[in-house]
Length: 302
Image (tube, rainbow, N blue to C red; front, side):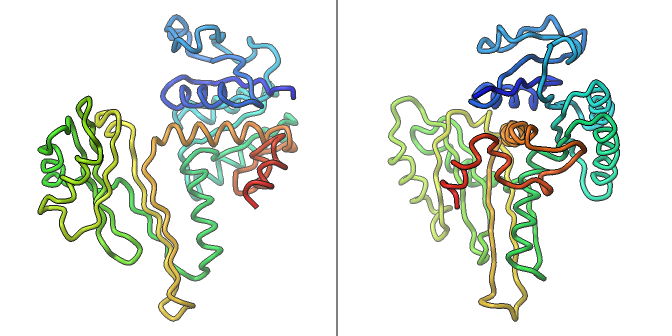
């Protein structure tokens, strides 16, 4: 299987996440990283020391697709330059609604003129989360969708969890389930040699947590979780008179950069299957995101 050569344009948090996703993908090859001239001398992570760093994608030779990992304010300028050099792109500028449509139309005009494909809005939001919203709407037409960001942190519950023997750091959050019940999510960073089961039992037995469903998750670093972790609760409810008062619930805690990197890598796999012009994930057949492994994906998930 010939691997598709991928360039990463921009090497902030998103660029690093995309580089990791590309390196781990059997269908993709990390051809190089494009950085600003003043950043060319900065060292890459040790697992990428051999990856070329250049000021422009054209210096990397043949490139099948460039992943645009720059701030949204710079995305159109960078994308325009790449398309003018007839380099296919995948990007995930954080635009929604009318702004995204206008952005897509302009990139479609450029990509069509230069006879190359482009995929826009291929991140987490817009991107994968947008597809979840759309599918929820299809399954419960005429319903109502609510999106809640950032699971709420509870200071009192966090302090109680931190006081448990063997807990180095803790973070307690709360969410409402689809039927309105309160759930506690307690993340704990444990002292070396501490039994997670004992900590979980102690937290659940505390009077602050009694009477509520409490889930305890050991993590390596609370600081990292607070810096990178995000939360979302996506809920779709049917009409009161609908069949069985239907409700769909998506709950997630995640690193947005890691998820966006995974989606952009998947979109890169779809590039060889796209015609000229710009499309979004909404336009793509889902199977194309598996690239050459499309048949395997269908056998596993359908």
